[in-house]
Image (cartoon, rainbow, N blue to C red; front, side):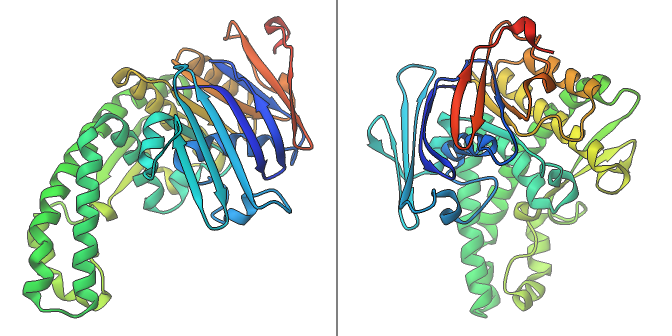
Length: 363
């Protein structure tokens, strides 16, 4: 789903904002620190129940205020989301009914984000790559979330037994449950990764011509062993650490460019372009497998990308059935010619004003 309206109260420097985004492209322009990223952050929060910039709620609430409030209408014209957050409490309502599971928000409003730190998908730890993989699996494989929750519950019970130094028999009571759901999780992840890889190979012809991109799943325990055998043989090591050191929760994706690790062999600018390619591949697959539309937030798109790559990315995105929010300092930095209509919102000192924009005036 996309957004047909968004109201913001007391979120960072956005004290009172109401906008009606375009169903396709929305260009957010303004000087640095004007509030462009904060606007994108509110949309992300409506999907994830958290920020992509800060884990401190007090930093999200406007100065000298006790809470922030976000209200959104979805473009199906029948769904309205309300979210209110203070430093101690959070209330979420969908069509005036309270909900407690963030996964319900994520299902209603699928959102992906690309921002200046998105290169961490490649350069940082495996948790970033697991999140990338599991976002896609969550939205196309409904059984995945059920198995993931059961796996995490069993993992927590086994870890508690390990920390309490219980007997081998008691610590191993959870092994069968872990193994059962690890198998389901891995099956869905591998199936999704296979489909994503096909799309990545196609997109690479435009964004990385002449290069070969590889995505290789690392399961979280040695490939030559069955998971149950590895749990048994490493029980004493897990007991020493006080937690289970192997399993789908330790999985990773090795990302390569021409058989070389993308983590160490390419520049940060190339990493950002590669991450853009990976997220676009996710959007493409989501559109193919789902009846819903996804939102892409692209914060500071012109940074570290030259005009040629900018134009290629905008051209590719224009062919996807998505709602796109792109931030930039000036409108002429973004080529909007691929869209028949779009909206431009100018942000200045926390105020957001829609500017009438003739598509022919775009770069």
